[in-house]
Amino acid sequence: MTVAILALQGAFAEHAAMLDRLGTEHFEIRQRRDLDRPFDGLILPGGESTVMRKLLHDLDLFEPLQTRILDGLPVFGTCAGLILLAKDVDGGVPCFATMDISVRRNAYGRQLGSFYTEQQCRDIGRIPMTFIRAPYIKATAGAAEALAEVDGNIVAARQGNQLVTAFHPELSTDLSVHRYFLGRITQRNRS
Ligand code: GLN
Image (cartoon, rainbow, N blue to C red; front, top):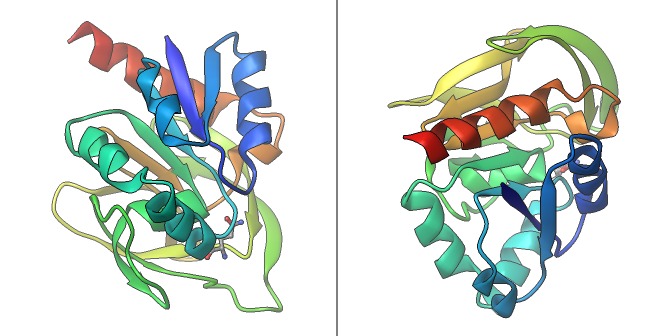
């Protein structure tokens, strides 16, 4: 199994380190020709969603990646990566718009820009959650389901091939969210 990590900007190296610890092959997507390599899953990291959206278009990566996601490629978006997948973005412009979630960017304001908690996540268990100028999911629709909440706001969700967290599992030492994502790739490869 090989996982591609979008590496235009943001916290992509931390995801690579998690995949190293899990013994999973990975490579970075920085330009269009990187898409020629086969991959079974895609990680959209945290960072700045507005910058990533612009670079995706400038580098001609937007359309081929959106097509693959719509075709069922397993994708895991963290923080800014979650925003890139959302169909509705309050305080921003949608990017891939493949997931039936509406999100609020920078939802915790300046005071609470960054914080840490531990909560239960459905099908995964109790996990550490590090939030950095994070969005939250205001609502899910269609086939999207909430997996975790913090203070009544949805912070993790899935929909078919798509998995998102408003927090950064790659900034903790806990591998369980990445392991869960890899499990979903394995399931898809079997079916
Ligand atoms: N605030 C960022 C955005 O809107 C997301 C923050 C993050 O990814 N840590 O893109």
